Image (tube, rainbow, N blue to C red; front, top):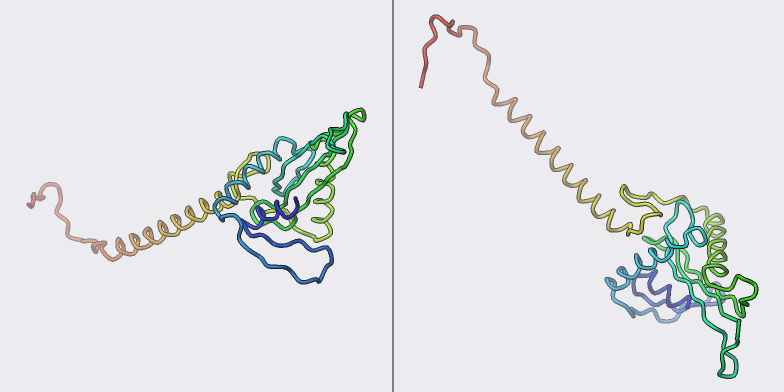
Length: 202
């Protein structure tokens, strides 16, 4: 599950997971088109927004999905027991962390067995701890985007970039117009005719 969500975090690139730090990676390969992965990211961000109090982190965009599946033993469902899961990544635009959480055998009688109730808060705590440990600064969230409003950071950044280019172009045109107007300004005349002697010229 962690590897699958990591594919989405890496825009379609599968990176074999490793258990021991420093061990060599296996073959990396594209298993999903970049555009398709980018379409799914905001969907997962929207899903997280519904339980932001349980899985979100203020100042950081995250994306993820809950899972609640009834436990199976010997080919039969176990009454009242579930696997509570949550998987996702932070930060949505440029993910640094992918985490998958599973709580095995969560019991209905405890009142805390759904993914949003049990696994999501663990995801939140782990993400916040890693962000703090790494010292990652809060995101520079573009204008028009907030963690509370499902949207994609890259789309807003692209729009802002286009707007900045337009502003620079407009400033350049304004500067050219100013220079042109200064050059074209006629010198003031001191012998302008008075109203009595004024003549209309065509």
